[in-house]
Amino acid sequence: MMPTACQLYEATEATWPAASYTQQGPWLLRQGQGGGQRVSAATATGPVTQADIDMAETQMQAMGQARLFQIRHDQAELDAMLAARGYLVVDPVNLYAAPVAAIATERPPRVCTFCIWEPLAIQLDIWAEGGILAPRVAVMHRAKGPKTSLLARFNDHPGGSGFVAMHQGIAMVHALHILPHQRRQGLGRYFMREAAFWAQDQGASHLALAVTQGNMGGNALYSSIGMQVVGQYHYRKHKEDLA
Image (cartoon, rainbow, N blue to C red; front, side, top):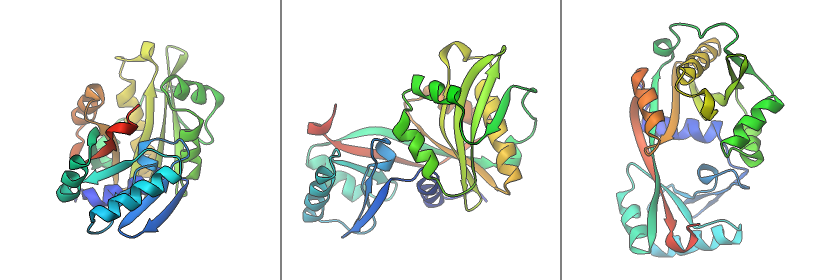
């Protein structure tokens, strides 16, 4: 049985954690310390009033963060409330999953992909080229469960880097970046197979990830290897906070 959207929310939270959390009223507030939207957005854990939104805005601004909310599949009322207050949709996301056994069918070519923890300096350079800087690498170090980084080489040169961590039988892939000159050579598929074999060794049942709907290449890749969209979410960010 495929994991539910709620199970993927939980796995994403555990494998890509915020620096700190505060439960205040109906909100789970996150302090991201520059680690990106996923670790900085507030999420509702119950019914929300306009006064609750005021409170969340105040708290996020007090932390030095943008007014940013993650809206999940069953939160249409909150979505409409935020839209009426001048919040714009940012980065709609697809949540993909597949049984590990469906992806771990053929190992990548020898000396092409590797599982390494802790990440090597060359991987930090690769991530930096893709905008995955030190605050996001810090997120990886905060993940508590089984985890590894992924390194790819192609034509005797570095090809890309990624991260995968596991929570309750779900292995989540994050921060996958392939260098521009190494793309269109199958490294994305090799990365996912390497992640799947690692997940299989850890006893995971499913491989999953989150990708923005605007990432056409990523969505095409994950669909082509048999992964299915099992959930979605998006962000609402106040128009005054848009960079």
